[in-house]
Amino acid sequence: MNELIPTTLTADDIKQKARSLGADLVGIADGAIMDQYPPDPDNPRGPSDITEIDGGRVIVLAKRISFATSRLPAWNDQHKFYGDELLISALEELALDLVFWLEDNGVPGLLVPYHHVDPTKFLKGKDTQTTHPLSATHAAVEAGLGTLGLNHQLITPEYGPRVILGIVMTSADIAPDQKMEKTLCLGPECGRCLKACPADAVQHWDRDWKSCDTYRSPFGFEFVADYLTGVMTETDQKKQIGMLRSMESSELFQAMLRGSGIITGCRRCADVCPVGDDYEELLKKWVDEIAEETPEKIARLAEMVDAELPKSYQNQKRWIGDLG
Ligand code: SF4
Ligand code: SF4
Image 1: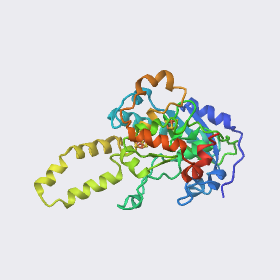
Image 2: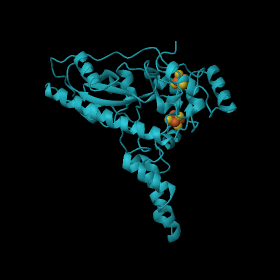
Image 3: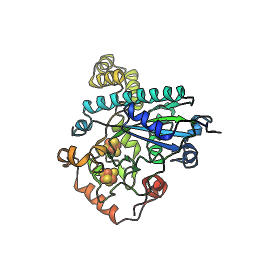
Image 4: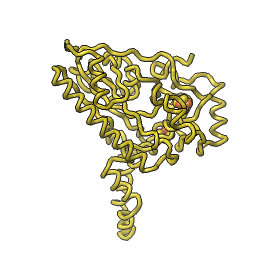
């Protein structure tokens, strides 16, 4: 069982340290509460599933993404991919520095990887949603950083959904934060995430994760496995060599070199979300118009406004918050 270790460090000390290392937002969740409320009861992933010793507190770190990359309108612009990839590396270093600082102060710290690929989840015909060892977005809600939106993206008051998250677990006996009760999302009346989604994956308080994955991780494990299978089973050697020298191969080479397009990818829904202190001044003018908007999408949103709240809302109500 996760037992808390007495420490002279306070939650404020830890938050101050994380900010001095470069975090823009920091919150602390109660690991026991996260164990009690797994986001997906069919695939429960709580702190105790990672460690039974040091998951009593979950420190959630966030760095804002560059607003200039949000102004780039193409979902698959390599500058976005690279920018986000570098940000993930920066967050990992920040988290590692925090781990060693905690341990220098006598309490353990365990870094939880941002991304984890379980190849068994990528078998054709099965659920291909990329699952993380611990849902960082749900942890962020439990740590009081924000609430989930119409498509279950994390929204923060400061930067809307435009943050990348990192997690450090610890058994330091520090006070956890409280989660927000009222939703920050403006609901289907806004629906800008749905209008902008190139995969049309945004649903009524839900997301078609399988469709989304092909955009948010365009050169991820499934793409690599499929592509290499195609190369290996091609019987025409000329065609096979052509496949090795193709654009797809080049994209894969770059993705493996820098990770971009594997862990990072589409985030159009985050770029256009009007919530966040950064939106009006730094983004609105550049992202107001949504090229992906269609009459069908607008009609679907209008139906959602009048419809009853779906089961997907009830299942995630704890993290979406009260619609008031
Ligand atoms: S990440 Fe891209 S594909 Fe996925 S829901 Fe957002 S806009 Fe749609
Ligand atoms: S774009 Fe609008 S509907 Fe979508 S998450 Fe943001 S506030 Fe909610």
